[in-house]
Each structure stands twice: as C-alpha cells, then as structure tokens.
Amino acid sequence: MSIKQLAQTIATRKHADPDTSWTAKLLADPDKAAEKFGEEAVEAIIEATKGNKARLTSEAADVMYHLLVMCAAHDVTLDDIEAELARRTAQSGLTEKANR
Image 1 (cartoon, helix red, strand yellow):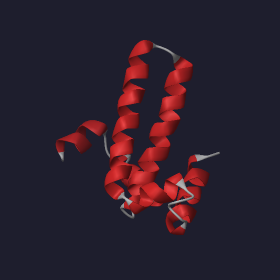
Image 2 (cartoon, helix red, strand yellow):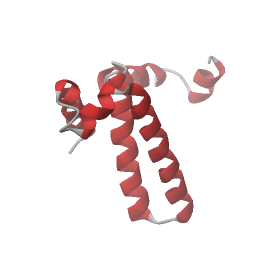
Image 3 (cartoon, helix red, strand yellow):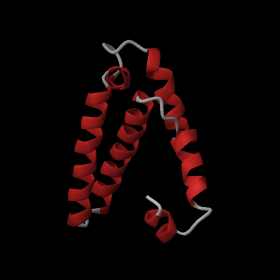
Image 4 (tube, helix red, strand yellow):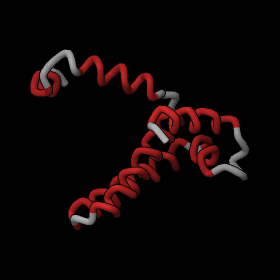
C-alpha cells in the first residue's frame, strides 16, 4: 500500500463507526490520535537505537499511519503536507530553518 492509498483509506474512515474501526475511533478523538502518534514515534526511536531493521521498519509503518491519522483528525491532508514539502524544496534546509 502506498502512502497515498493509506491517506485515502484513512479519509474514508472519517465517517465510519468508531465502534467498528480503530481509525474512526482515533479520528473522533484528535487528542487520542496525537497520543498514539507520540507513542509510536517513541517506539520507533527505541528500535532505531537497537539496530533491528525489521523492528524499525514495523515501527516506522506505525508512525506513518498514526501521523496521517493525527493530521486527518485536524483536517490536514497528505496533499497539504506534500505542498509544504514542495515549498520547502525551493530553498536550502539551512535557510528554511533560519526562517522559522
């Protein structure tokens, strides 16, 4: 599944029943979505320090999913994120950081 397909699947769950869909449950509670993203990010960091590629890959997939759910819970789409990334590629990373 591509990132775009994942984002589309998440978008379709926005109006699903939270009692039957984990994604819908997270989308209905933006704070819980953010909490889950944070948990998964920490787990990915831990696996990155252990050097287990398979575990890091698994946790990275969880991070990507939960990031997209958290963003969707706040009406931020993958298109929005891609547009921001495109805007940033027009300048160096050092310049972009300095302008924050």
